[in-house]
Length: 256
Image 1 (cartoon, rainbow, N blue to C red):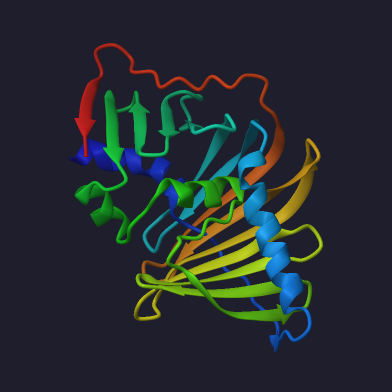
Image 2: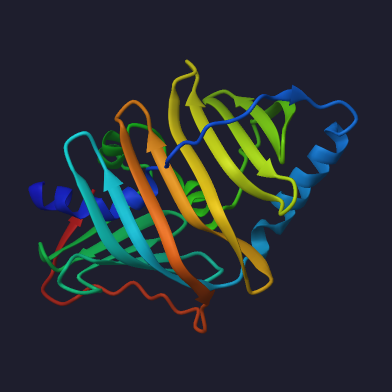
């Protein structure tokens, strides 16, 4: 599966994010109701994001190496996220499609087309934790998605942010929400033992089509000391919603 491993720099967009420092937290009193209203409003807006396309750079940092790639990301406001990676040979050499139940990677460098569901044992081994389409929407689109079993256990006030702490059977999440623009500033996901799995931050929000989108997203995995940074130089509305999954002829098909 050596060829498959070459494909996974593209998949790294799913995984990494840089953490930032936080100031002192103070418990909310009368504002608790306001904070819950803000979160309810954010969850209700999840289905209203317009289609967009973004151009930027993807930086991958691990203890052994670092890599910087140019990329284009498309979202059709329905169920598909597509990423084109420029590997130095131009855009379209590596393409990644993310749908609600599967991911697909077309890699002309290895002449392979890889498909996998998020429940794949090999994908789980590579990521070290369960991963779903809702997580992709959070990383790419800044959407907050809470499983029904997650229970709110604490709401704090930290300067310009509300800080929500949730706990469920599989672990916990801590979510920083900017009160002014009502968008996520940071998300920390931990397992049942309290070990941080992902630390995601969203910065440089700019208005696009009457909405606010983060132009800088960073993902950090503390245990592996791995970080991915996505910097958008430009985000504009997408004129077409067609993001067809294309399998080039004579390309080897690999299923994880």
